[in-house]
Image: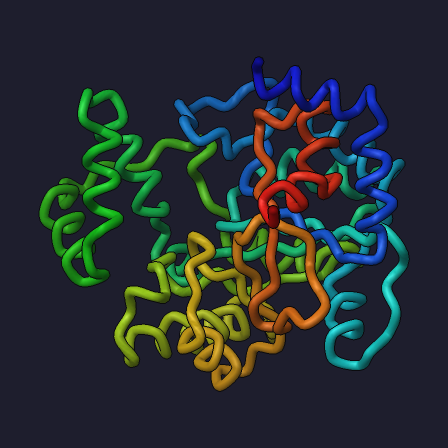
Length: 306
């Protein structure tokens, strides 16, 4: 039985409705990446770039079944004890892809849905792509691409950086495509809107659990400094690259001045969750209406707990 068929059955039998009612008092946080036109202009094997017609349907569903809230409301909830509305949902975007400004922002404005952008400050400053994007662009057609990417992810930060600089030091100019990140001007303009807040996604998108103490401080504090200097943003929220975090990372984030931190642990927020280690559910271009409704309802969390 296909996954989509299971999710359709969950909707038809009322399971989604029941679970949403049970989980209505728990905050839901979603992690998006890119929003493209009719289809992505890159291979996008992980389905990170949602076609804008599907994204609009997803936002329509969230408006009808949930209550979109802002980062400010979430901050006040965790730090000052204010009460969130039932079925609260926070929309976030990791990496800072330019297509979010071009395709997602108009839809969000039209629907009055607030969101948070988490750009990778050091890459914006350097005019570079994420290393995974660079690898896909250069080696995506190779038969062993998945193995190569997995091997690179397993390396320590310095080892991976040395390999990439050695292999990709050819001066090739990046094309304009879904991999392209926002400029500082675009980030600043987005942050001045009423519906958008800006946070940090680290300095270089290095997994923070693989950083030594100095690297970790640089990822956290260096990105805050760049966001302040280049975009006029005093970021107090961080989305950990790849969702990787540990107690040491959380403590370092607090020392660096962050008050909220976001992982990619796929579940609703629970009572007792630390403000600097909040879970998020990844949403992408494979999340059609029945799939999204089932994935967000909460009943899969029951199954995983038993």
